[in-house]
Length: 63
Image (cartoon, rainbow, N blue to C red; front, top):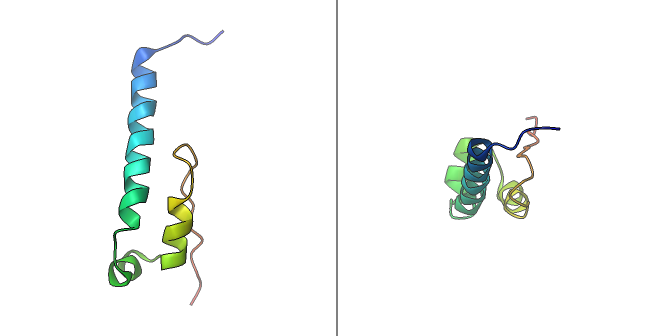
């Protein structure tokens, strides 16, 4: 049986909060900044709809 670790739980919660915050901030970026980081407005919207425990995956568009 795995041991319960309060430190691991705190770490996981911190990661979830950071992920949620980052996704919210994506929506505040303008199109120029989104292009700078290599994602489209549609990708930013799609990412922001994910729940906090889902991993981030961006499909890079090939030129």
